Image: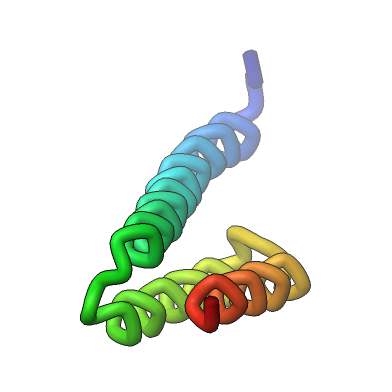
Length: 84
C-alpha cells in the first residue's frame, strides 16, 4: 500500500477511471450484441441500431477505451453484416 499522499490519490483516481472505462466498455459490448440480434432477426429499424452502434464505437475511441484501428475494424464488420 502507498505511504505518500500523492500516491494514495493516484490509486483513488485510477480506480475511479477504471470504473468509468468498464461502464463504457460494457455499454459498447451490449450495443454490439443488440446489433447482432437485430441482424439475426432482420429488424426493420436496422439502420437506426447501426447508427447507434457506430456512435458508441466512436465515443469509445474518443474516450480512449479502444484503439482507432479496432474501431475501424469493428465498423467495417458491422457494415459487412448489415449488407448481408
